Image 1 (tube, one colour):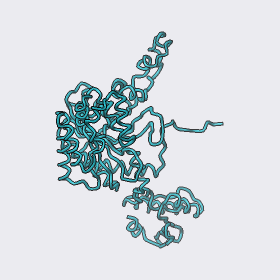
Image 2: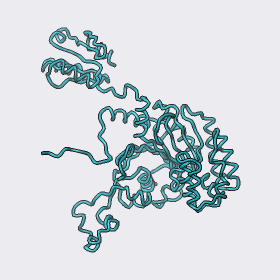
Image 3: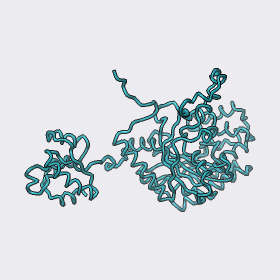
Length: 456
């Protein structure tokens, strides 16, 4: 018995309707990327292992899919190494390439490799799949698309302002009113740690703070205490646990805590600049909010941090995120190349649109008119009409086989094709086409030109 076919865990097949809906999201994002002046690039699906390894920390390295060398890949492994069965030692000898883990590190490699061909500041977008050897679960896959946009070679805060407007523009175009663009600044978080005398515990402090909305104030404080942050230190930043109000109100609360921290006040000034600019460039449907507990990508980001949440009432993690990094290309030897970038979560955006029933009806449309097949003579007559319809931008097709008319009509219904054309001996003799609406059941005889006009 033949083995039942399957696909690897963490991967998916997509039906025609699913692909159409995904394309709708991607096309919307892509059009806005281009509207904001970003240029497309693509990088290979796999990179040299040396490009990727060591760039994501131990956990990230573990999740990188390695590719076995071609041919006799064990030939370079000596007997001692083979006998020890140490995969960490053996892997570099049998695998010199790996599937990309994200689009950011390959982008950094691209910038360094092509720096003499690039005009800086360089605005690029990239929409391609990435792979992670993660444990598959709901909303987490081993193969998925990332939709990234970055600017490198500019320290101007107007780039952050532009990215906030880009988020707003995309989600407005997708009819996702009510998204919230949460914002923070790495310098503000560093300032908090400095104020409480725990700069050496910045990661521990912010990891705990980031859980405030999930586990509550008391549990966050308890976690900080277990990490060696004293009660006295925690009391110095007590106001941040209950900060509320508008963006400006929160700024004032945070400013009162960070007055003694130079780096913290730098972060405040950057937040104030961006907030003031956005107040003069009002967002269409999104809201900009200051979230001082936001600490995503702490080892990576150096300034602004972004995270986008879905409209209220939708239970979903972030649907976008990003931030400012001061030395992206430094990992490949090109220093002081500041940049800022954001990403859109394609799969989560899809789920949100589905839950809110926000996909336009036109997304599912494919063929607009199906011609019934009565035999060779009638099929040739139909194909002549189909050719002219297609030339006028109308999607049309002929049912490929001569079958009972009912079966051909059933096919049109299953495919959600809204119109069917019947062209038998009578229609051919009168140079007409019988057009039937599958929704209303109404039928009328029309000329080819009238059909083209009705379908266009």
